[in-house]
Image (cartoon, helix red, strand yellow):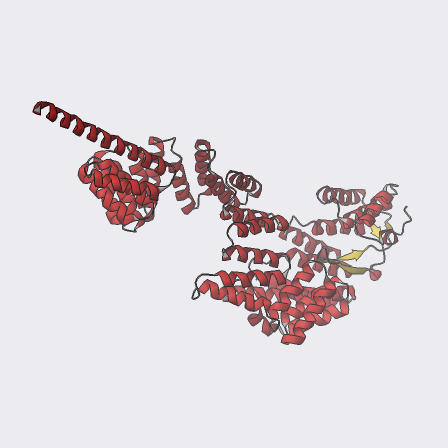
Length: 594
């Protein structure tokens, strides 16, 4: 009877142990499932229980260390990995992950010592190379880092994480094309990872390959449509493509997902400034200021300063950005009104005088334009203070001087144009030479070709065709993509082939071309003209039309050439010039075309 009782007790004990083992197995399996799903906190809770129930199983501590590593509790991760390596000194993965925890804490020397212990156990484990590569990268041993990332990929070519890490390395050393290649490899392995498409879209955006970037960010959004950062990048892409309405939609979606993101409001405000909607700009920046988390930060101070600069009616930049917005939208009358109000409110302003002058010139109000350009020059000493005041980002002294000088160049250019139109050729030449001399010494000055083309027109007015040709050729050399220079050279060929009254030439300013032009005079073919010269001029016109099929001034000159050659098709070409904006084209040609 006693023997029977002992057997029953033994069977009960074995059954209980079997039950406990089954329960632990089920718990462990569940923890693995939760880890796979990224539910690290829930996995850690189960693993903590398992470690208490069986403190001799290194796997429990290893997996618990991994859970804490992903929860960014690096001290807990190190503690559990240390226990795992005591229980199993051959756990090379434990050393790799423990080294990663030290790395994340910024303890790079300890991280390197720890990963070295893993290499004493295995030198064919990709994860060890990956971890050591990160340490090398952070401690500025780039070539060693690249070698380790590449070795990790060779050992585990189907692990997309390793391609991502090498892509990150390539970005830090400014090799975006290599980064793009690695991201593309990762996408081939995991085609449904939205972050990878986002990452590649980011790289493409910085490479200025906007069409492909848009395709990738749309793919990322299709896979996961509730990530604000995806829409923020889409906003940037649309901004780069100047698709402002679509950019607005993207950033508004970002705000809908993450309404407390001050940066999204900054982006939206900058968009509204680009769209010349300053009232909305002010609203967005005010919202960004309210949401900004750190009261003492320099960035918040900058936001407040920008808001104060462009949204306070007692400050010059308030009027500058609004007048500039009207000018850019060809609302020249509104531009003048706002600039005048700014001067009346804040006092004399060289940049506001320049805005008024530019608007008057665009309205062909030459006397008023000259007055305001002279006002700008008379107050040019103010520019050194005004330029950094209205610019939307900080400028160093060299940049301030460069921008200030550009306003002086613009004023001298404007005065020379007015002088040309008013037949004051000597003063026109004097002012354009001043503008060119200054502009040539301004780093990265944009628009030298306009200055040289104007100089060429002044020489043309003086019937000095040789110097006119030199100026137009110089203009073409400064910017061969601007067709005005080539059109003016074709005009010279026409003039050289005809008879006209050189004392009766008239000019006008063309706002859309940012240049003056010759109003075609009455002319007829010279008795000894060179047909090749006219044919070359005609070829130039046709070449420009191929690239710019809506350029009215090219059609006008082409019509004149055909008219001189008695080609009946000149009327069709003249009608094109009229359709594209030269409404008095027939009068200028002295033709009756219907």
